[in-house]
Length: 260
Image 1 (cartoon, rainbow, N blue to C red):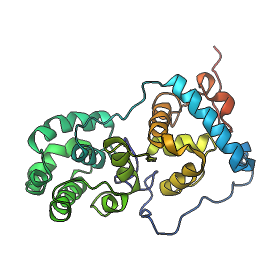
Image 2 (spheres, helix red, strand yellow):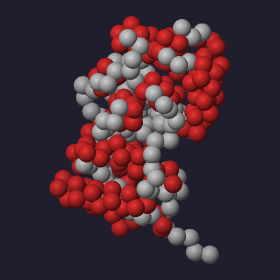
Image 3 (spheres, helix red, strand yellow):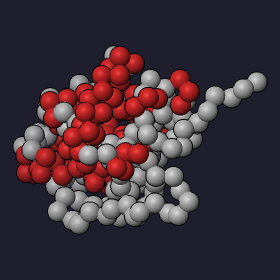
């Protein structure tokens, strides 16, 4: 969601390609000479799990109202909204889907849509031609293979056009009540600054987080990390001096309070 890669599940940072489940992971290389090494690099898995639990408790205190930003009432609406959210803010997607969801109520409605008309309707979300192809192909697959219903299995979701691990987990965690980690641009950034994971591949970040975060709270933790990334741990100017996780964060690039 928000501005995460070139497609719904493209690598963050705009790198071409991407990894589906079963492909070999692309791991980040060692720190370059002269760059400070985070203390988290020397942390045991047990110690990291314990620190992660403290981080989650602090995030709960800081963002008790954290929740998914996309508006939806059905699994299909959330699936469409998540595909549209690639390289677009959730706020803009919510504006577009307000009218879209009134017009297209079922997978068959999307499958029968005129591509040129649909492109105009979602144009303001960006990459509208690619998104139109993904949404309409996804809808056709739902009609042909799933009776028009959104499947509850991750593998079946990821077999749909425009759906990778992140999008599948957004739907599973928020429409079906499953526990799932969705690595969007905020989770990708925050998890690495907190030293909970390290990779330039979002799917690898997902796998590492699954080893240190409480499985019973994966969806809730996703919302907390997203809220922290939107409000405090910003990409360019993180508010480190006022961060509720300052004492738990090993990131060596912390910003300092400006003195007048």
